[in-house]
Image 1 (cartoon, rainbow, N blue to C red):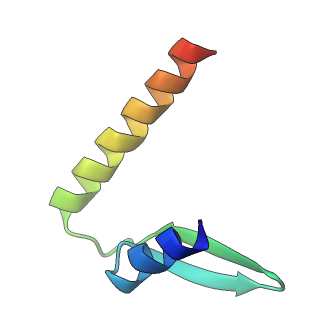
Image 2: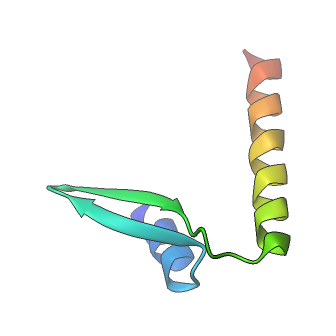
Amino acid sequence: MSRHMKVLREVGLVLDRRDAQWVRYRRNPDLASEFTVVIDAVLAAEFNLERKVA
């Protein structure tokens, strides 16, 4: 997982913050709206898929 998050951080999609031994990630608030729309759509689809399986 950390390798994937590293790639997302390097391309500027997420920001990270160290918290003791943990690294906390969040979506970069300065992303272009086009990227935000795509990310929101992927997260919504994943959420809906999880609800159907459960």
